[in-house]
Image (tube, rainbow, N blue to C red; front, top):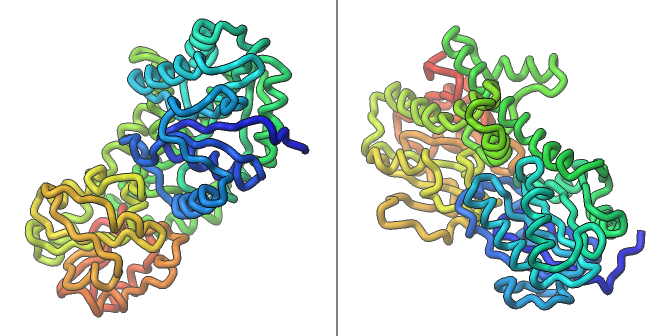
Length: 441
């Protein structure tokens, strides 16, 4: 389908989705302006191999001129806003007002025939009841006739660019001509696109998938605790479950919380009286997941006759802690608590997150960032594996390699479940993971 190349495209947002959309537009032959600073959103906890891929591709397209980086919306001119994507999530009252301020500013710049595409997650009716009146008041145009307003829910969890593209997307809009123009651009990026009858349907649809993952993640943690209390190896149960269930278990790490954005919107939109028990409970369990990880580390060190204070703890990978290159290490409750309790912490971010080696670490957060895995685990009494199972390091990481560098006695705390307990123990190390309980079982 031919895209109108003369139509200017602009992407606005301080989150990872803005950078991803800009890259996808450029990849499909749509030059665009990009305004926003990656990492300025403190609640953004994106992780995954896609983060490195998007960063690399973005730099290539900036150098080629396909993406023009703009410092702020003040530098934009009306012709730049033929089609404007706004990616910020309205996941609480403060961020909702932030989105409204951005729309108010953009409304004063929009001209007849131009379209705003809101792609952040939000509560149903937010786009129609809050953004549409602002657009009409401050632009002076009728939405759906003279200017367009469309909604496309986009939430990126750090998966590969190809994986994100292949996931079916939703779209809704006011004004058939405006919706058709946005569809053309969206179909150049995403092969599968479903048009919903109302904005509210698309808004609710954008919340469902991440809420589902949030609930399943909580269920996995609950099942792990049940197995542990009965002396059952949870990793073995997971392998069996993968063969006997449609979807299986083994989703993102319990410490990964980006899907909480959707749960937070969902719960806030219903109010305190009508909040559903399952989603509320799932959110509470997932918010407590870091404490479960810390308890596992504490018990593991105890099996080695050690306390957390003055123990050398190496963390391999950061995805399992809900971090990537846009986060500070202090954003991880697990890292903060380990340091606060007196542990000597070293972090190996992983090949896909080497940008974290240059992250500024505050003086209060006493830890060492190592670009080399072997150096990170030297003399460590506990290694926490938080790498994604699909990463190269996870595939080549062996207990023997760790045993050569680590102190004795020492323990592997395998959050990613990438190692076999028997292999670890044969190498002379203790082994534990979420749901395993006693490291000798």
